[in-house]
Amino acid sequence: MSGGVDSAVAAALLVEQGYEVIGVTLQLYDHGAAVGRSGTCCAGRDIADARRVAQTLGIPHYVLDYEARFRAAVIDDFADTYLAGETPVPCVRCNQRIKFLDLLDAARGLGADFLATGHYVQRIEGAAGPELHRGADPARDQSYFLFATTPEQLARLRFPVGGMPKAETRALAERLGLPVAAKPDSQDICFVPSGDYATTIAKLRPGLEHGGDIVHVDGRVLGRHEGITHFTVGQRRGLGLGGGDPLFVVRLDAAANRVVVGPRSALAVRAFAVRELNWLGPNIPSEGVRAEVRVRSTRMPVPATVFADGDGARVELALSEEGVAPGQACVVYQGSRVLGGGWIARPEAVGSAIATPIPAFA
Image (cartoon, rainbow, N blue to C red):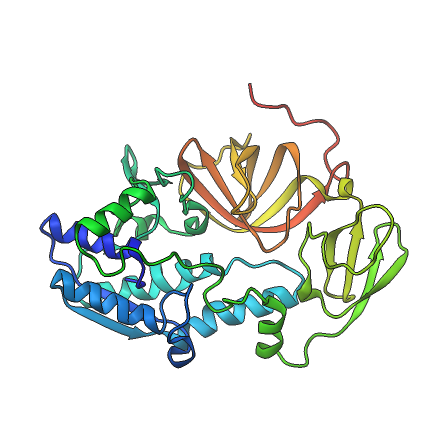
C-alpha cells in the first residue's frame, strides 16, 4: 500500500472478495523530508494515508523501513548509471529489487499466500502457467516497468486493478469511502520530485562529475558541458550551442567525458544488444522471435526480431527508431503479453551492422 488510490482499491477489492488482507507500506526514503510533499509515494504523508485506508478497511497495517535497501538497490544505481553515460529506469529497479524481492519475502514471513499491488498490469493463466499482460487501460499500462518479474514471482503476485480503467478505480474508491479517492497520482521519480536529476546526482556523488567537450559526430568540438548527467540520448534542448541546424544528443562517452551530438538522422538505430534478459515466454528459437518492442516507457511498441545472445539478446528492428538509449529498458511483447525484457546496452546506428534490410511484418 503506497498511499495512493490504486493500491488502496486493490486492498479494498480483496477485502470485498473475502480474503484475509494485510496492508504493508514501505518507507523508502527520508520520512522527515517527505512529510507534506505532494506527488510522492512510500514516504511521509503517503504512509499516513495508507494507514488511514487500512483503518477504513479494518485490516492490519505494517510499515517496513526499507530506506537503506532502497538507497543501495535503487538510488545508488540511479546515480552510478547516469555517471556511466546511461539513462536509468529506477522504477524498474524498485520493482525488481525491492517490491518483488524483499517485499515478497516479507509477505512469506507474514504467512501470506500472495502479494497484491496496485499496478496496471494483468496476470493471466496460460497453458504453460501464469503470463504477464498489459493493463486493460492503455493510458495506465505499467507493464514496461515490470518486465523483470520472474515466473516464480508471477506465480505469487496478484494485480486487482489491472483489468480496469483508471476512471473505474477512482469511482470504486469513492463508492467504498476510501480517504484517498481524490488523491492525485504520484509524478516523476519519487526521490527526485523536482525533476532535477543532475542536482540529485551531484548530492549523491559529490565531486565525481566534471565538465567536458560537446563534440559533433564529425569530430568537431562545438562547446563545453558541465557534466554528462545533464544529458540523455535524443535530447535537443539545453545544449547551449545556439544557431545552425538542430542538433541532438547522439551518444554519451563517459570514458572521455564527452557529449556527442549530431543531426536527427544520426539518432536512427536498427539494432542493439540487450543485457540481463528476463524471459517469460517460450524458448527463443535460433531464427529469433518476431514480436514488438518498446524502447522507452513513452514509446509505442514497434515490430522487431529478438535473438538469444548468451544471457542477453540482440534486437533487430523492422524500421529504425530514434533515441535508443543505453540503460533504458527494452520490453518485448506479443499482442498484450509481455514476453520479457532487459537493459539496452549497445545501439547500432543505421548502416553500421546490418547489411540487408530486415523484412517488415506481413
